[in-house]
Length: 139
Image 1 (cartoon, rainbow, N blue to C red):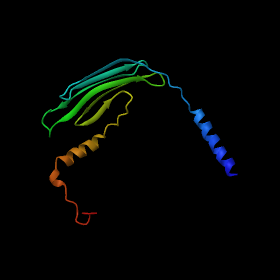
Image 2: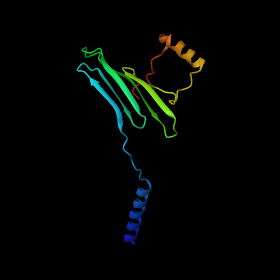
Image 3: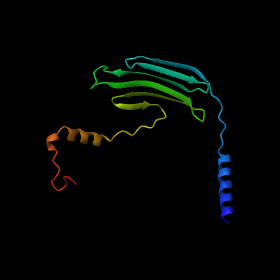
Image 4: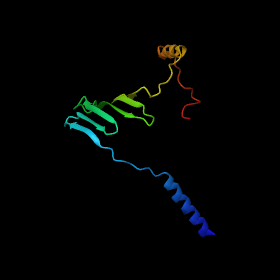
């Protein structure tokens, strides 16, 4: 009985693997560029035979001032999605994080006017903020 279960399991795994086989074809790189310098500046890009295009360039902001240096990069990439629709993304990455922009990237709805006004009112009166009660401190 154990042999039957083991063979059944082996056959199930083999059948599952066979159903998910995808043949990968070679996609050539039709253009490639890379430029680097010792001060942190760089630029690279490539384009593949299937329409993927990538480009980025960057530098070190405040180079030489160790406490204030920040890597800065901006670039873009584009490709054709499985439905044949072109997708394009541009981005900036700096001390404020990674910010991507593209028509397919969802954006949050705007904050209600009342909430924006309430935040502004609270922010303009920091003296109105009270310290945390002793009961809650340290818990």
